[in-house]
Length: 290
Image (spheres, helix red, strand yellow):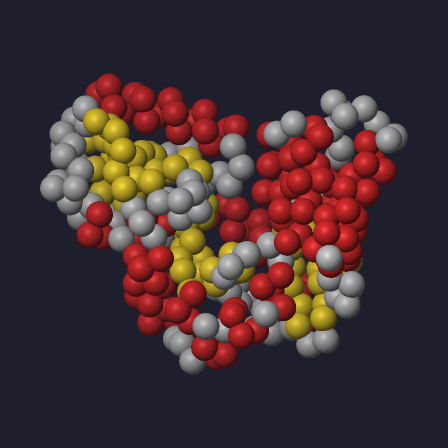
């Protein structure tokens, strides 16, 4: 019953806005952020939610706090039909449930690595400066992978992927030295990975959330798995796409370049428009040495 009441509330929020503007008209990011905040308040009435800026919502529940960044939610709304507003708000607000579920979120077997662009991570850090100053230990855990990419660490629960903070290391009795190895093992255990494609152009498919993170699973990057012509060259324009070809495959390289730019420019959860070369240990941006 409570879930039905919540869905009805979200629909009411969306319909209130649509009554003042045509369904074909997109709302601004600031308006979306306010509706996102309102939907969260309906979903979690005991939690305090505040709009920090047009892309950030801050929640406080007792001693627990979290930041929500609406960029991906807004991109999802903008890339779909205008009347999808209610569905997008419901989906993203519901994903916050596990933030307040310590029994689930504190389990280190749910820690996974998330590959993101270094540029997006710098933007998130800039918005968190005041929060980190007020609350030491609340900085997001991440480390560089190469000049274009970083590896963040997250807790993958039933409804949500929550980025880890420095305080989580103490709660889970982990160190940064052990974090990557444990997270990579967890990722390999959680995912069912399959290869698609032929004629020297392939892609890994793993469910839509962690394809970019597959660059960390070294067992995947062998000629037995991927019979390409030359060294491995990949494109990871978004978190759900990793395309592979060989360094001597001119047609494959052209297709990866074109597809990567198009997908990076037009999709949510963008990672990088660059191509990357496997040097035997990791992937580096084309034209740079590891």
